[in-house]
Image (cartoon, rainbow, N blue to C red; front, side):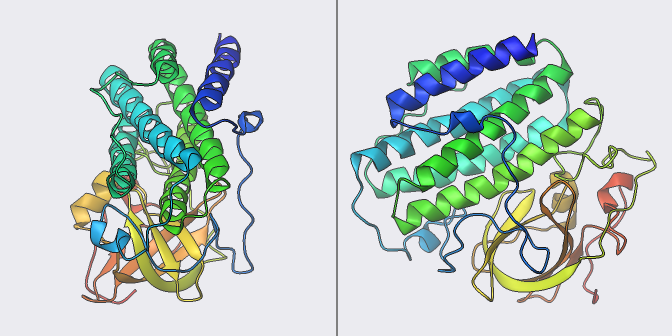
Length: 340
């Protein structure tokens, strides 16, 4: 059934892209290749222009980047991405209501942040917001797609996770295509931030799939490591032999990870894991904060934070042990003001 649905989904998505912006890369509907690792085993996503600007839900930061002329293609892309991010949020909220898996609730909150970032651009360029009530879409093809995804995800928790992975694969492909269509620095930055997070979300869903959908990772991008988000489940230790320390400035924080520009100009994304655990620590970096991140490149294709130290306060927040074990797995561990 899933294979048949996947073929239907590809057809619907292709139609959406043709109508909305012309062309997209749905032949990349299979899991996208993970971006190459640099010499320090740190994953880099996007074009890494190192300009230090960001949206991150912060309009002050966004206005620091000069606005450029907006083509009809760029405008259509923004309108489409606003509704596509909304589709993801609405589907995940429904899947959480149906199956109660924290991964859906956490990633739905992240998708809301993505919608907010696109909305800043819509306002900036004077575009009318197409977003309607939950489960409703101005684009008829997206409405049909939403209905199909809800039907598929309602079959079982496993199918719901399959739907989540398909949405993130599609989002990555769409963002890659739209990045190639724009030379506006502000739009490029927002799309890059969203794509970074989508890689993280995809790893979370595929990790949950590997655990038969029974994990309680809460959206952790490293959940594929034998269900490591489960409380008291014998969590394995990760390979942290390539751990590095990187200093930079925060671009955005989506509740599950940080996009930041390193001192050498590289734009990086690091997974901080379970959203509820981070909230319990009081961890809430904002755009412009200076941070020192100790992280390693995990086998799910994302950077994973061991600690994050805030420049202004000197506070160190610990997300994993020095052996890579997620502290939220056992519900233990707190941020502290001590040195790492």
